[in-house]
Length: 510
Image (cartoon, rainbow, N blue to C red; front, side, top):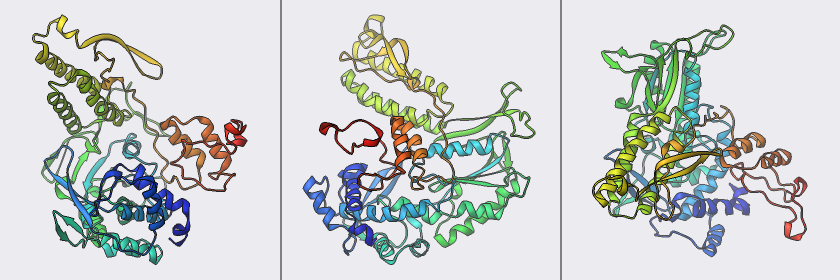
């Protein structure tokens, strides 16, 4: 912490992330301060890292997606957020080296798609029993003493984190103590939650060890407070609940009974008098297996490869499809009298975002079905504006055209929803299905594997191949100034001698 306080680069980076990069940069805490100007950001750099007490959090309630419920967020002041970002810079590299390989939520370089890909790899060679579970109010109930004792960090950092945890919240003018939990809305809260839950997968592995020549008895894959346990044995699946409950008790946590169920990946089963359909939902995806003939069947692994008689498919869950369809329907209904380009501009980001999230699984059939439903709703939208849906009236809003859908491909459309200014509706089916490459279990952006991370992230962000080569050559350190850089800042290439001063665009000058 002392080194961070005197490092100008660390201070600048902490302030930048809070005031410029993060989505909540314009959200004020209890002091009402937001949207800092450049000179105010520089003043904040001088101010953070000093021994001052964290201010009370401002509580706001936001709706849960697809539910009639709200969840609380505790918003720290911008100054406290910058302090937390500074502490996170110190803690995260250490803990990223220790975290379990099959933990994916709120970690740099990992995503929900990695968790889904790992589940696929765990079940696609056979049929399994699965218990999917959720921890009840995880962020609100974590025991502070347990968390602080687990940190294994200098006293100064522990003191700063204790201040953040014990700051209290102000809800509609009423002050409340925060005796448990990590406030959702804080920069460091996701990292603290991961620290509290770290060790659960290792516990399961130690409880049911794999013997030489045998398959894995139980696998736990976790994304934040949601996780699944996969095993071929019903006995292990039933025992695990008691084991996990015992492991969670010291942390002040427990499983949510209504969200804990046992199912089979291939067929319907009955456990304790309750029937459960094949497959399960996780992170908005439906994961299950289907019986197929020998020409479509999956195979077991080597050395004795054989047909298994089924195939694993991952699709968008029915709940996710319904919620997305309702969102699109609501937008179209709210724009009944709006210009066509305004409606398209509102729909396109929603469609692109949802399609991209599900572009790594078996989604094309779903995309086509939703596109058909949207077409019907837009046809009704057109009728409400110009009367009877005749060919002549529809052609005022729908046109023939060619659309570029990526990878150099084009699609000819006979009924393209397009405004007069050329704004076009993006269909779900324009999104290309591209399989996600699962991150290596023990890989971390802080492990010095610059070539691996630059290639992995660069592929997703369109970074040129030369950046990967450059990072490998430099080993993560600029030879000009000696400064190390994080692997999340991979899209930026600098010249040692600027081009305007005669520098050349060569590796030795990058």
